[in-house]
Image (cartoon, rainbow, N blue to C red; front, side):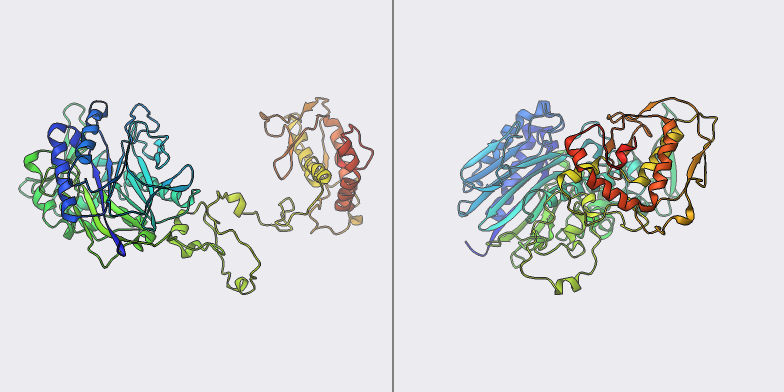
Length: 618
């Protein structure tokens, strides 16, 4: 082998060709095979969407014929290694995506491996294999359907992705077939930019890229090619086409609601008509077929949201959708949607490093003068460098600075506020071992964010917790600070008081304020106060520790751990509060001594305690 391998990457939404399979399947495959003969690639990847068509229950039987047309062709005979993945099980609503991935490897390429996602290892790719029907158990692919809430207007979506990983002559990369949601209504699409459809597509793509970046597998270069359903800025396009025109609303005779918008000139001739599924310009073919990249391409903005992480070769071809499905109108656009570049081939920054830019690169439509359905296939002919290994997006050997890595800054599990660490790195030593997979493990915000630890937040956890033995640790989980206990008891008393009885606070007469030490900065400092005007009710309330607890029915500490106080008589609460105030002079020392003295009580699980710990008060 040379220094690079010529590859052909093709994306094709084939749904409409299954509407007329007796004619369209042969026409489509002939055009596809003629392109292979012309370009002579050594590795072919064909990603199809809507395999079987929209009426897949009736059309799925034609998929086998489609596969046979390709596999039995003379053009593909030199390709002795084949892998086909067809998601055809439409009975499984939660998994069905109607995606189809075809891979053909030339006999001249010997070192070919495919990734096993279950075993997390590469396997030799030999022979020809076709996986169809229900392919959930196939281990050499990863398939996922997008969550339904990504596309709220669609009652049942088939959108998702299908990924494979390859090692070709020492170079590793992922190939991902993806299908995103379409624009359901021109009226909704023209309301603003980005439209709700655009926002949903962006969420789904971000979800996919984030998943790839943070999953358990190595981050490798990837190429996404599929039907992204990227649309032009409909509102901007309409404004461009209707400058100086008058807007007329056409009402529906049935419900008196407007069904169309017409933009007319001074002679009242309709220049542009827009309906829910109508986009009709008076010179439709001339406007959109002749040099559309001169004026329409600036309105192709959706991919710009991913310019930090995804790259694309310059587009010099016409929009790939929506073409007429009649054989005699192969080059004409349907007057249903604003033409757009829905079908794309996008590369990660690391995948761009695999491309041999000294070789011929061709990015274009397939079958420009042939009827290929409403979507024209889009292909990228390029060459991939060999023996490149795994090109990573960044090196996490010491630490990850997401701001320096486009992938990490956008798709890491959490956003990390990074400070300048240059002074710390100067003092780093060689004997420190740091995990090179910092962003590979699931990270939660609780792991990376702490509440400020200041004297004013005495109940906050210290970042450096003390090491304690098991008995003391157990005791701390079943005890509370004096200040916290007093606050919770006051709340408890307030909740159990009569509605007509007011509860007020006054300066305690049981505490000599002048004798109290200065403990303002102490973490267990207690503001001297007492309760007055207490209720005389003898109602006993039980503090529950079960899962269906309600507010003020139980007590918990700063870790949200609940404590099983059995029964508390409100009449005993004032006495408890006075005891707490009397112990405030040396609150911290008393608590620590009590904890130490209470080890035997906790370990033996006695019901009574002779020491001066706070649990004995109740």
